[in-house]
Length: 210
Ligand code: Z5A
Image 1: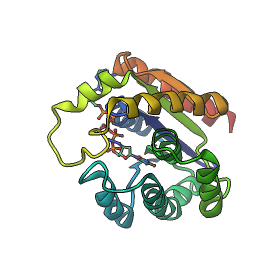
Image 2: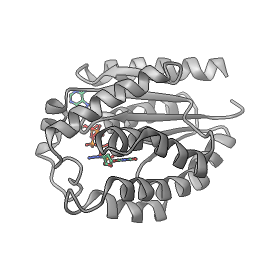
Image 3: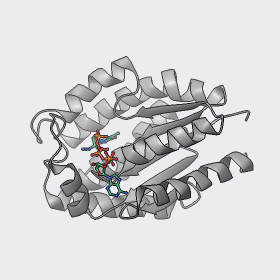
């Protein structure tokens, strides 16, 4: 493979993105690809430090715009140091969340106009976008129930009201409808192996096509 592939996983809390990412990574490695598994916010030492500010503490700690700026500060570091160099050397980069999360969480659910977030993206990353986005769709009640018993401090977003999570789900579907060539919607209620096999086929199709 010459140029690599940039794949992102998106969806609400507990949709099964991390589980899917791990299976994709191991299957693609077995097939001989260089795979870089990464996440947002995070993926570089500096971006992981910014993550600490974002995912911990009180739910109303930051305004949606402050959040968006922090997510983009972390994202630029991540793209510059991990994603772009990986794609350039021919690797498959799998990122658990990317810019669509900002559109859904800070935009539709948080109330910032999409045009302002598009302008921010354009200013700092230009037209850079994923080659393929796997949207794992799940009713928020089911996703939140899956994560409820989890121990830990990273619960800032989980603690927001159910209406916030409903807006989030609707906005992800709208984003997918806007860019059908980039998105594949997966039913998060399906068995993890079934989800992985559909996702692997979509990734293989992109590799064969490029
Ligand atoms: N955020 C934002 O607001 N703006 C941005 O721009 C970005 C992010 C980039 C980051 O947290 C938070 O930041 C996130 C959005 C916000 N909000 N929250 N919370 P995160 O990335 O660490 O959190 P997350 O993305 O929501 O991850 P998660 O809660 O761990 O969900 P997941 O990765 O989609 O699920 P999972 O860990 O794979 O699975 C959850 C449980 O379900 C686990 O017990 C699995 O065994 C089980 N599972 C998984 N798949 C299945 C299936 N298919 N069936 C049954 N059970 C399953």
